[in-house]
Amino acid sequence: MSFVLPDIPHQTNRHFMDAVVKSTHEQEISLTDDVYNQNGVKLLSRGAKVSSETYSKVISHKLVKPIELCLSVEDAPSGEMLARTAEQVLDEFPLLTDLCSWKHGRVTPLGMLKQCKMGEGASSLLAVAFAQNPLAARHAVMTSLIAMGLCNAHRYNDPQMLVSLCLAGLFHDIGELYVDPASMQADHVLSAQQWHAYSSHPIIGAALAREVCRFDKTTQQAILEHHEYADGFGYPRNLCGKGLSVAGRLASLSEVLAALITKPSAESRIDVALKIMPGEHDRELVSLVYELLHGRQRTAVPPPPGSTTKAEDVHAVFMRIAAVLSVYDDIMHHRECLQPKVEGMLSEAFNRFVEIQKAFASTGINGLQSLEHAEDSDALQEIRLEAECVLNEIAWRLLKLARELTLKAASLGEQEAGPLLRLSNALAGTEETHHEAVVELF
Image (cartoon, rainbow, N blue to C red; front, side, top):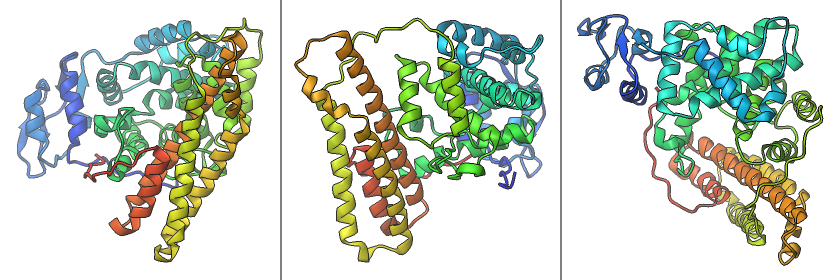
């Protein structure tokens, strides 16, 4: 990789250590080595059980050996446990089976998970992550299954790539252990510094994959790039096109599909997500997804009851778009006060916004208002469902763009960042004032 991953700091990350201590409520964790600070003072002994006291003893010291390399979890995730989780999600989500239904001799996705090779450091990290978030194991396993499925369809003659993506799927979010959990709540508005910290979790994850898990470079790269998009509007490095590795493209699309496949009307949501903004993902891989999902006969599933998208929901999106246009126009009216770099950032973001606006207009769901008083037929219910999927996707992309601007603002001075944060607030649909907070990356 041309990008140089950082080393794991010898100063223990407080969020990681807090997660480790909390996980001791569910599983026993012990130390595999004596722990010394960099002055040579022994802080903890090999074999000691991790507890709340462990946190206070290590958190304020730089260590000779990072604590991540000294942990052993008694009942860490095994290949058998991962395979059982895989069987559960495959039974629960039929679309998942379509995406990863393959077999080469005796080799299957379930078999690869069962035979997954992880050292003690890797399995300990995974155990802490799964204890921190009860849904993390399901999402990790689903991402791994989809990544193997797409890899098999795309590069069926590359068994090593299958192994790398199996591991990358399981560990793609491991860097989130180093981020304040509050910043990962769905309703939490992130400050520039918080978003900067969160958006670094792929870098942290790739560094852990190298130093703690000892995974190969392909696995590291897939973890590093799992939030990058082919159109350049991903993070942490805004890669685009050929700048993404094959493993990164597979991991990125797999992570998106794993998130969508658990939602109601998953197939409709996936269709909308992949069509509404062409170019976000590798076109060949997107074609493979359609082929895998629609390549066989399937019993039609009626839209679920309770799709309550109404004309006012569509109107709210129009109002949000109008607010962005108004804010941008006002900022540009005083463009003589902007630094050229800031003006360029704003222009780039606005061009992206225009693409989202066009995508919204092209769906035609503004016609929902004319159907407001029609009978609540199956046809109308399907239209409402499609509208709901579109609104969710548009809102998500506006929020992603807001976060991208917030991240760029974090690299600027307070005065320069002002216009970016103002436009970011409009994109996110909030005019709240963000209070900056220093958030450690590790």
